[in-house]
Image 1: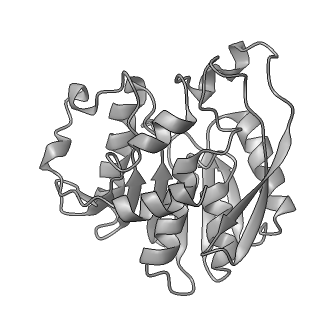
Image 2 (image 1 turned 90 degrees about the vertical axis):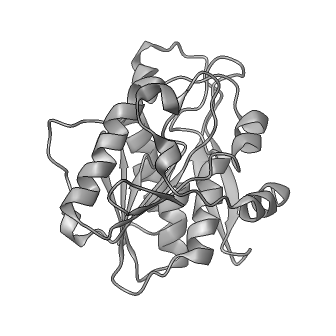
Length: 242
């Protein structure tokens, strides 16, 4: 957990997720560049994902471009989402009626997994890439959680537009591997500060993955001021489980 200047908690798995990034991703490309890509995609495939201490299995549709041509994209399932989901299910107090905002939902692993494991929780799944959103809606429907998961188009780095959800209803915010480019740092962290200003006491759980070429300190934000608690044990157990 990190702590914002106003005293609110943010969960950081920066050091814990380095092995995840090194083992699972080669290169970095923003989802917004999808329109400029050629068609060298691997076919769509259904990927089973075991969650909630092995009690449930999700089947998520995903596809990847051939390595090393540039990943990650929102149409792929990435380990950081699995790590954050298992952490949230094990550690967060989510009474019935809780509303979880998932930023950068991608294929929906965290959002769908939360809804499948905690049916009494409402989940707002967001992303800004249209192709990602189409696949996310597909996965939400196929996993049978459409009643508790709403899918919204939203760019968390955008400051000029309002939020497409009621912030007053949100009790928890989740985000994994969303800082993949230096250009998104400033806007994303400003959004988090707006959250805290709008709703004091809001809990934000952010898993940061170390990415080559992305230096958070260079953005001018002094993240070293935040209180950090690693969760190496949770990460290692998930990594060993595949």
